[in-house]
Length: 269
Ligand SMILES: [Zn+2]
Ligand SMILES: [Zn+2]
Image (cartoon, rainbow, N blue to C red):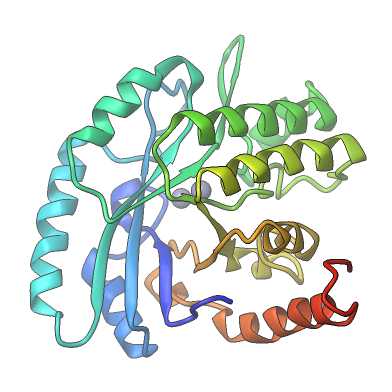
């Protein structure tokens, strides 16, 4: 149900909040016996934020040139994909499309990190207290509503193949609780993902803070019910984190498959 020989989501120092050269990630992946690694670097357009956590167009030129060099150099040991994690910004759809059109991507992952406010953007997946405090002014429910409504637009409007860390919104907030209304939004979102024949990422960075990946089991079940393919991503921001916790995924999938079979073919958990 999920291929753990491929890490479909790693970053590099180019995004300013990760460390290590591209080659360090490749070598780490080879060391861990992976068959394939896909770089999924941050592309954001029109974000008004106090620091840059994404690549410039010059960075992406280097990224592709260096990526091609590494593909050739290490082709006997591993397959390397050059992808992009494109962040949604409803006001800049055309510009985002134009930026995406500048390169050939092996994978486009869609995510939504930055919420627009009257005084610039706030990062909804950040651990920084300044983001959490200011998002609190809107209230958890409201942030979740906006996140899921906008993320659905993103999936409808952007040309992606994978939806990344679907429930990582407010992941460092201590009081996030999904209400039935939020699960209803999630259902709608997953319907769009299924219709667009996209995959859902099982992002193992979740295991660093809780006992589950992003998304949680309940949401992975919803994806399986819709026959949405699952792909594994470590979201490594350090070379040593490539493929982290992938060894836990077979067990998780077995558990989910068990749930599915235990009710004589009917999809009920
Ligand atoms: Zn990042
Ligand atoms: Zn992300």
